[in-house]
Amino acid sequence: MLYPPLDSVNTQRIWTEQFSGLDRRPRAYDGTFSAMGNMTGEPWPLLSSRKKRGVVKELEQPLGLMALGKLAWIDGSTLYYGGEPTAINDLSLEENMLPKRMASMGSYIVIWPDKKYYNTVDPMDSGSLERLYETPRGETVHYTLCDMDGVDYPRTDMTESAEAPESPDDGDYWLNTGASPHALYQWGGQQNSWVGVSSVYVRIAAAGIGYGLSVGDGVTLSGISYSGENDALKEQLEGLNETMLVQAVDRDYIVVIGIIDGNYTQSGGRVRADRTAPALDFIIENNNRLWGCRYGEENGEFVNRIYACGLGDFKNWSRYAGTSMDSYYVNVGTDGPFTGAVVHRGNPWFFKEDCVHRIFGDYPASYQMQTTFCDGVQEGSEGTLLAYNGAVFYLGRHGVQLFESLPQTVSKALGEGKLKKGAAGQAGGLYYLSAQEETGTWSLYVMNTERGTWHRQDDARAIAFAELGGEMYMLSANGELYALDGTEGEKEPEDVTWYAESGIMGYDYPDHKYLSRFVLRMQLGETADCQVSIQYDSDGIWQRKGTIQGKGKVKTYLLPIVPRRCEHMQIRLEGHGEMRLYGIAREMALGSDGR
Image 1 (cartoon, rainbow, N blue to C red):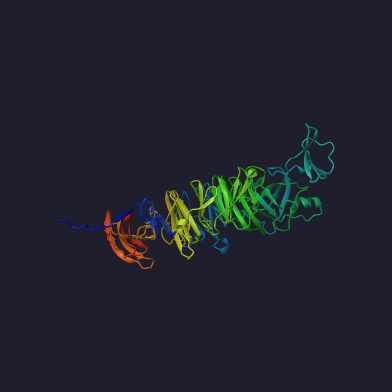
Image 2: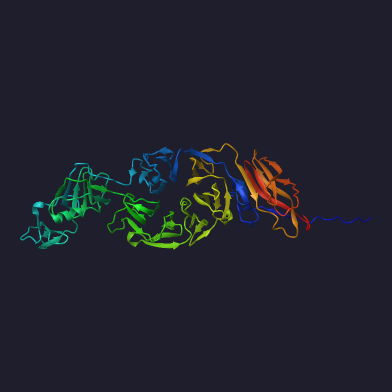
């Protein structure tokens, strides 16, 4: 007996087992998702819910975070190190003194704009970079010609005249008032001639004038005046009103290079002797120097400048002696404010929105600046700037940039919406970026720098990140300090809520094929669950198609879904608790022209 042949259904299975994270572009690749929350790609090639975070600390007024052997953070007016308050407890909270900038140099933490420092090894070594001094009211100031150690020249053996003295004895001094400027000579008996004293010094003595200073400090003197009738001495004394290097110091005197025709005591006015540091927009450390930049007012002058402190001495920014120990500054010709600074390939880089200035050289006399015009750091996104693995990452006006020889955008998968502001950190090859969306909401994204894949976690608004011992710490704007991998602190009590929405399915199916059902293979924690929904033809309605309850092991779940015929669709996975997605199988059937 012959039976008529049965019609066979032409089916095809498409299996996806490699997931590449978030991709909001209209034609995304297979294995990507158009939207997600609290997802991670760390167990590559799987898709997983993120780990529970650890809550390490809750700050009242979070202003900064960094790691230097231990975590350091600023809460209100106080710097904390290793969880304990430090002696730096008087930071200004005035609007013009925010935000706070932190950097490290050796065992020191420095803070701008307050210009404070803290030694993490010796907590007693802390205070202000600047030493500001003004003579007490009514205090007299004494000026004496002396040697480099502050010892007076023997005035009884010194002649002040325009002509050389006759018949001098060995060691006698002659102050040549006929020279311009005046010069000091000493009679050398063996040479039988007057020998110029190469450096002449002035001791400035007043109560407390040397306290807090060291030899080699650059000190700005002001208020020095002369009320007598000696025009030459008046010019010499008032010429001391400039930045000078301290040659010798004691509590009640300092010695600087200079020459005066005679000793003098100033009894009127108040003399200042200040060691100052510039106002800086950003600070970094490179080759045992602190570097910074400034675009704006500085001591009544508008500056557009890059600075470096003295070698190994972050307290000195005005040391100019013509040596490798000197401070340094250079004026910048490009317009606009600085937007960030970073150390890369052994050199300091200073960004503006449309360029970067790089400093090359080994010491101040050899420093050179190179300017590259490019898509620079977006204003307000300085916290996203970091160097890692031979490249620089930052948020520019056109997305996240990876700068090697020139910047290239690496965030196209995040879509066309513009990100702004934000902060970033790096740990284990992951670039953590917290930034504000065009809608005003915030998102925490994580990029795998090796694969270039992105995943979105939640709406955390971070002000700073710090990596310590392989753990990434995030300080949020609401004051919570998180350990993102949960290795420290108290873990979040509730299960993580997560979701992932696929891209549009249907446009890429030729020959009238349509999706007939799904097969999901995933692992769920014992208390976890997963709901599966479908949206047809972008109608905005998610229709629930099934729920999976976790059993704590990998299992293949068959979800027989018979979707209605449509042009395209999306699927949504959402749930609570631990989840790992191993694969999605889509069974395709051959349809007809009809719908």
